[in-house]
Image (cartoon, rainbow, N blue to C red; front, side):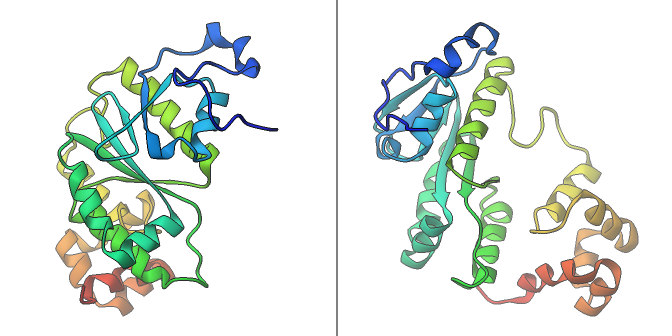
Length: 226
């Protein structure tokens, strides 16, 4: 299928979506930075019937209501790490109440040191407090943006973390789940067994390996120097 990579600024629906337009849910307009105009995300937004407008943004790549989103392909993410531009770009997002980073693509285990990438991911989530959304390709990114636009229209108080305040246990699980490869069941298992986040961090790697297997290797990053 061929896409018009320069769609109408107002994001008119493609013919494939016109017949379904009446069944589409309302959505907030997606503001797309002019530098994303030639990316593959923009034609997919057009194809999926998103309501979007292209503007020059001072920071970030997309704005939906009061949420700003930076998009990085894995290769962009790595080059920004090397040039040390990444942290500054993400710090600029903090002027918005709600913010997120989309990391698009698969981390190549044979390329740039994947543990360096994972370490940066942990720093972004735990130290900068910016949620990361992992997408597999441009189409997946466009679908995520469209879902977020619809959710924000339905609930203006939509949060990337939770619609309501989290309980202490939910916060504890959320922090442990932020480590790559650690899902809800594993996080709960560690917290039930070891009691606190500090105990998990202080537990020798050998013991963690006995508890959850190779997943425990992700906690090595805690003891590595920046």
